[in-house]
Length: 397
Ligand SMILES: Nc1ncnc2c1ncn2[C@@H]1O[C@H](COP(=O)(O)OP(=O)(O)OP(=O)(O)O)[C@@H](O)[C@H]1O
Ligand SMILES: O=C(O)[C@H](O)COP(=O)(O)O
Image (cartoon, rainbow, N blue to C red; front, side):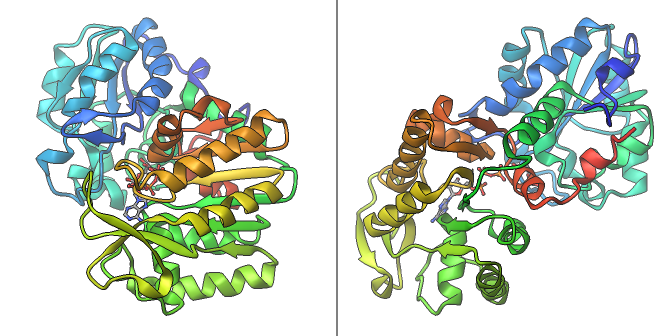
């Protein structure tokens, strides 16, 4: 990390310290269901507080697209965060303006405040100068500890670094060092497993990824888009039909690069996305038009585990199905357990990343058996692609 400033290079005592963290955590009914990302940033927050900084935490939650959507408030995260840091964390209902300035005026050195969702403002994702200036108005120094959001050139992840002395936090430092150690020169064959629901934001990076890996297993909502591009009628499944051309381009690029793509061969379908929903396993040409593919089926699981058996290195982001609701967790759990067994046997180096992916590995009971688990999903895949991450680049010395 010597190429980057770290907290050791910043004087934070008595300073209003804007700290970008990733608190985009899995949540159900207003409660945090996985605290991995919270635990990852807690040491940085505690260290800054212990050094006498007035710690102002900046983070996004979900994709409110510039609207103040109450269900995407960060307020429910303040409690679990306070518990993880072992100090009180005050929630502030805005991230810019007088509300923040008034809260800061009441803070003593060492106090910690969590500011409201930065994506409540359009200027955040657009990295608008006015918005960045408004964020900067309440800070003296900036620390970025959100590796998992570093692939976004947003106001709080990139813009702010140019406005005041800036440094990487401990979690950011640890992630970059660990990924370099594990995947800097990976042992081949390298197999990537990509699933999940963020189809439009992750599909583009697959085009580069296929030239870096020897095999690519596609599952989850991502697979539905590829299957539809191949002419499969995916019914009401999560699928981005307008990305069919992109999916086809990726399949051509993979073939040219000698990267074998593994797509589902069968599917577990249901008419509703609910616990206990009636479901059945069907062939790809028999998906009912009113049903959703919520998991890949047994033939697909066999193909996925066989591909994992070929790998010396596995990188995984995105569950193979809607794992939060059994039985749609079956494929994700089976693949996770299989990768964990091979890792424990010393036959595989396994790296997984992503908010929900980590939750899925925990659910499968194998999180600690993977070689390395990153808090980052999209950022981790972009790092794998070899792309410079704007949030990291902005911290270069
Ligand atoms: N077939 C499917 N249909 C609908 N949702 C699915 C399907 N397969 C997986 N999902 C959902 O995908 C979500 C996780 O996707 P996502 O891409 O956000 O992964 P992640 O690990 O959180 O990565 P990141 O950190 O980039 O967000 C889960 O909530 C899961 O229910
Ligand atoms: O969950 C993530 O991967 C990060 O928090 C980034 O979220 P985003 O994909 O909505 O930018």
